[in-house]
Image (cartoon, rainbow, N blue to C red; front, side):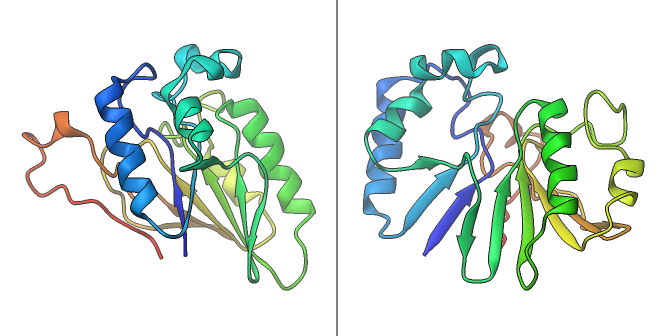
Length: 181
């Protein structure tokens, strides 16, 4: 079994030892593989240069998770992570539009694109998605609320909402984690 988390394992990149130990225990008890994207709360200043100072780095060193940095092939499905940097993510997005292997289902996984449709510099626009000529699923993390599935051209966009955000529990009584299988 494999789990892919869409980023933000915790709320602050320098999370307390108590929280790190709790995550380690949970993931050590899990018998499958656990991958995560890097979320904006996992990385200070949204910069990979600081990755070695983070809780996420410590979790990776402990062996309980792997950061999904390159394609992961599971049977005939390719999970392709998109960079936290939107300009780099768009390059990757168009690369996969031209370079999908025949017979494989592609799922593009990203974190930091909650501004969908607002600005070409902050997220993917509807025009970006309409220009994609391959059938692809795009799963984006970060959003604190769940959105219905959206089909734009050949792209099916899924935004399941955050797995856990305690500060939202008082205002979103019906907020439930959503897991995509």
